[in-house]
Image 1: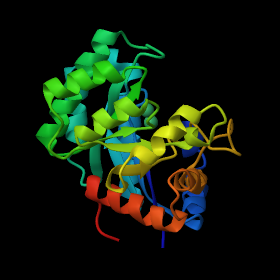
Image 2 (image 1 turned 180 degrees about the horizontal axis):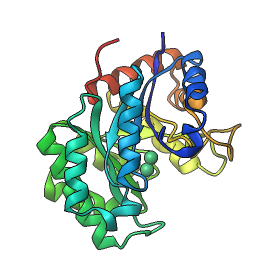
Image 3 (image 1 turned 180 degrees about the vertical axis):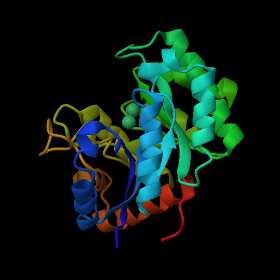
Length: 261
Ligand SMILES: [Zn+2]
Ligand SMILES: [Zn+2]
């Protein structure tokens, strides 16, 4: 029975989609599941496909939104389409939305506007928000404090900030999710943050097909690689991997209100 939740990956990405059946089979063999598949990257087709995948696979759930890279395209028609997709019982979250001032693929103002709309949408729909934040922690905290955390809560996915930002997000009630980056040689600063997150707020994710953990770094990532990241996180927290898997999976089930397993 799958017992390690991948709280964030992109199953509709074409690199995964071409191989989806095998990838889900390997995930199950590695005891990875349930899986939260995030649309959001590219056009609304990605969200549609993600919801379709979730509806066809018991262990897959979906999150819909507009990635900060594409925030310039987050207009009213797109938001209505997201609202319509969220009618599916398999849509368990809104996002990923947020701020990415590292790549700055959409202007900062567009990213901020889209983030506000996503926070409002998550609150209206009673779903948690999935937040992407890269080199923008301070501004993101300001906006979230102003608009408010959705009542169903949220997660800062693929956390890459410092200790101070982690504490601020935790104070606001957010969960913090770590990806394969914690296994990278140059990520000592991030590893120092891992023990600061209380058990009840910790999640792990692959963010597949991106960010494969060591020793797979540079390859296409997939949910079956999640145990590598879990082991690294467990070691940094001096916890048993199996016990930590139970904790992070229970946290995902609670946050995303997945059916009990
Ligand atoms: Zn992201
Ligand atoms: Zn992502």
